Image (tube, rainbow, N blue to C red; front, top):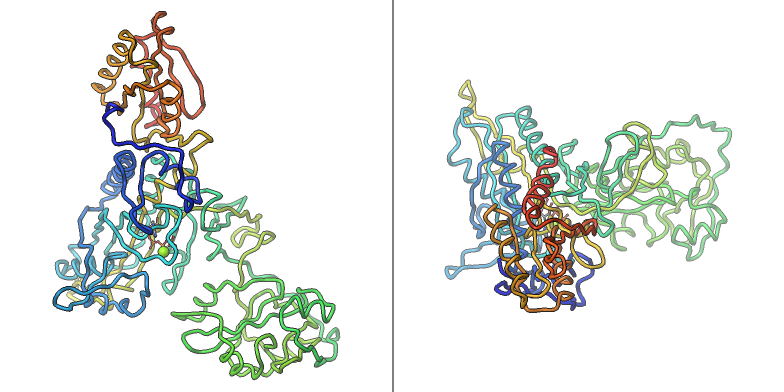
Length: 575
Ligand code: ATP
Ligand code: MG
């Protein structure tokens, strides 16, 4: 492509809402433009990168035996009512009516539509397993769209759905996708990690998120420095501590102390001169309308996802003042496990505590010297807290490391969550009707591109890894008005094009400095500089964007050299 003919508006200006580097650079390099909140257009350069990611995904999905389909984006209310999600999905689901007052939504995901398709056409075990995927636009009315195409409202996703006859077969389908995802993100040139993720009511280890490592990432994750354990912080397990032998002779007399207006852990700690570690925090939650008390050590934080899963609740939030009053008989700040009327669950962190402080379920009072087994009982302790810096690996006891990441993909074993309500059934060998077992697998296309930039940039702009680069090479004639210079540049351009190399010829009549700046900003991995002085010696310069190296090559060597570098970086094994 000739630069002079391209729609490639580069610039210095960044909008004030562009908080992260990838967003700024995608605007500055002329890849995207915002239409309205969370809704973006891809310009030619940006769309080329999107197509590259899609191509890698298609190749790996096809290799894994999945078949491409294309499902409608507009989905009827009836299907969503059948799955029960019309009620539950909340405001991210954009709902609307047609001229006949029929209700629809814009698909934020496609479990309902694909399950409907499959249930109508798959009837027997002989037609299973199947894995169908699409690359298509999703709409989610995100509360706070941000970071450009990283968290937007309209975005491209690759979503795949597997249908199997039984659990064992579903596990194989899951493993295939897990492997395909590793291949996809490796081929994109990303540094990433699959981490265990929350799978809600499905449970087990059957959900992994693929995280691109980046400090700007919205997700926190932990990984072990010894074994392969890695998990989203939401899911990160905390090992059960050893139960210490508690001697009841150490138990001091229970005291009810007046603590006027002393409510928070900090206030209690300074008023009673005890450490937060000596206080048991009692949080009242509203779990599907029922109140439940969660006990945890004063210096630690409850992981609400763990509480929600433990209780098997659909909705969980901290109780409001009214519910607290009803549950404890006291206003907020004085809850405790003694004589409380609601269900109590306790984190491991309080298992070995003795003579601790808790609220007294009475306004302006706390108890001191509380002991489990004497003052109240706990049936079983469980893991309800957020993992911390000093925790040990729950698998091997190694040290836990913390990192931040961007979730670019998610593989999820669904079980019969959708096939059951939507009645996706088949007849097995014995003619028995069985429910299909499903999995779903998503990759955010635009987010993958943005995440790649988060890992590959410098002060001058983007530094594309070869596999995702919009073009692999730019040829920069230093002065287009010198006929031998432009002629040599044109020859190299023609030769590279004939070899199938993706190349831009910067034929603009601009100062070299301007052209170099744009080339660095856009991030072409290779730049061939054709200048009068070197040309007189029969040479041209090759600049490697990533390393900053400048190497002179004889004119006749430049095309084979560039071809070789590209081939090696697209297929590192061939090196
Ligand atoms: P998040 O927790 O980041 O909102 P999610 O769990 O809702 O993601 P999934 O439903 O698993 O995401 O969707 C699959 C993939 O789609 C994600 O891994 C991500 O790459 C992409 N994705 C999800 N929401 C957005 C969004 N608002 N903008 C861009 N990509 C998105
Ligand atoms: Mg989301």
